[in-house]
Image (tube, rainbow, N blue to C red):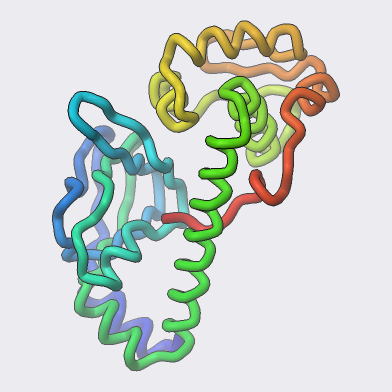
Amino acid sequence: MTDEHFEALVQPAFLQRFPPHVTLFERGQTPDFLYVVLEGAVELFARHIERETTIAILTPVSTFILAAVLKRQPVLTSGRTLDPSRILMIPTEVVHTMLEQDPGFALAIANEIAGAYRGAVKELKSQKLRTSVERLANWIIREHGVRGGGGEFDIPFDKRTLASRLGMTPENLSRNFATLTRHGVEVQGRTIRIKDAQSLEKLAQPDPLIDEAEASF
């Protein structure tokens, strides 16, 4: 977008710091802001009756609840910080004004929405086509690559959140970690070590049409 329109977009925005475990919004609310996580991590989650699940975990730089902002409709998830976070909050009305005035911004919005849609389809494919241990194996491979390789990395959040993100119970997560020991994976606390990458990849069978990252929610 043009510099002039960018200034008009961010001038009325709020840049705020939040401690961990702060609820930013609840499902069903009509959003007053488009959120952009600049530091930290944000969890989008949903509840139904007495059940809760993690929909997405967002790290910098990611926008979220964009579709609800564009349609001025209630958000489908709740959002909370996982870590100390710095978040830019852009008023909904300003987003709509800039969308009408700046073709470059409109194109960027379209690309973000398209990426989020493709990401949702990939997530659905993973949930429906893979077992829980295969989902965990692919998450380990992907996270290991994101964190630069080297044979080990730390889970960036607690194991209960990881289980929810992968669509399993904490008990299933523990059993799946035990299964992965036969495929060269060691887990100690939140540290994961890959001892046999070939065996892990043979189990996971990563697929770029499922595992390649897309834009966020």
